[in-house]
Length: 167
Image (cartoon, rainbow, N blue to C red; front, side):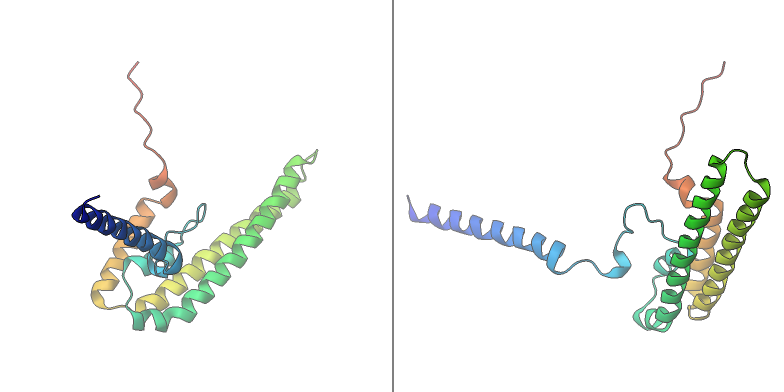
């Protein structure tokens, strides 16, 4: 085989090796920073997580808010567990015959209370977050919150339904 062809093949092999090594390094050795990772399948980021990502907090802001964000995440997880337990109890009540309306009513009230407390905690956390933001970040925060209220995540993810033809 001619010498120039051997050199070209060797360089091609070397280029392919570096190309594959780059993918391996990026995927397993040096994963993406936390801010840019997609949420795990099935998990939906909350309002605080969405705002924190959208306003592009700098390192000093992220460090100042780290305890607040971790505390919020922990409270949110605990409330989610409590909500799941209540839902299981509600399902158990639905399966009983006859349905105990008093017990079911109290379970539904507790579920509503948990949701209200979670929304209040979200607002408290957003207020703490807002105190650390720069003016342009505050504007972006309010835009994100308004958009999130007008277009909830569950509505955005659903495919648009085809319009029905007139009859």
